Length: 551
Image (cartoon, rainbow, N blue to C red):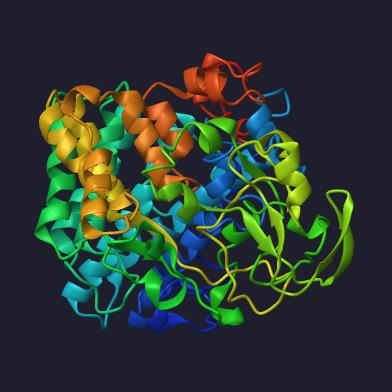
């Protein structure tokens, strides 16, 4: 008989590297039962729970949740030329219960949950640690566990629910009702909200505002699920509004500044981030998001691969909808601040460009991707390669810049040192707006969405011109509907790992993919609002573990 083997935290060699600055060290241990009940062992187990965030979210090269599961196959991104995991965009027969990306993430989430369960289960036996400190650490880990189950229920629907540590071989599993999963998530987060401090002594630890922010997202999602309750939207709005008003978070004046690498990553807009560093040992898998959104610039004339421009996987290509419809380019700064359309020469020489001999020096414009078609005369006069929208391909397209990592040590390095900005205040404003709108309060909802839109307005030549742009970016309550909310979330959160889930939550995945993603449109079906249960899970479970419909 095939059996499901669940590895626990116990009796195996763990690589416990932390996401926290104060814990950036190589910690290797043989974790044994007695050790985990000591103060040092317990702290290392908590560190392991934090470290799991990197493997789940920071995209271990090919398989991580972001962006394989949440960016591909949406209205905002389609596939580039890279061959990896195109089935997630095609929605063809290769997206099935044996798809590696699905199996990897399922297994990784449950392994990480068991690490969290070990911390929670062992906490009462831990000695040598002050009770208040221990309770805070448990609250941090229960937040992490809640996030993992929140992902599972949104991706797969009913899933196996276990809140206690697995210490040996387990051969049974059942799909718990969605209501039970949401109840467990909310219970964990309520404990976190009650227990966590408003600010953490060590940047990167979970805080009360982060828990409130996640709880707002949970209520917003539950409101459209089969487990919905009458007060879900009101609770989501109240929590999101509280995060905005009760604490010291504030939107930066400049949208682009929110993604500046280095000290800029720790800014007033970040509610919580998964930390990474330049230390090769402590960073572990790091953040490899820098790889995927870059076009193949190194195939083009006058440009070769370098660290500032990045290692170009060219996996995710913006849809035509994203590039040509989504933004008001005259008013909205987020288009220019989200995409790189110019590449400068770093391979000087004399080349044939646009039918004539051109000598490029270092720093000259080598490649330009205009946002409109050019006339033949305009192209003939250009001393650089021009790729108008009609000439852009799976290899050549505007590059999303949010995740570029010019501080990597080597040109081909995969682990990156960027923090993953998990919760930004701008998204919290949009959560509040959606919850208020769905509660029937469009007037108040518009005030929250307009804060984000005013920030996004282009700077004018004068203060008066800037204010005019901000005013022009504002919307009236009667303009609000769920499609406008989704468009605004797309403009603000492109590539940040929310899109597929946003579309499913709002019941718009199939409609908008068919409308805006022509590669995915022919194959997407109603059942694709859930991912397939891995066949490995089904085969190794005693008794019945049902597959999701359609797979």
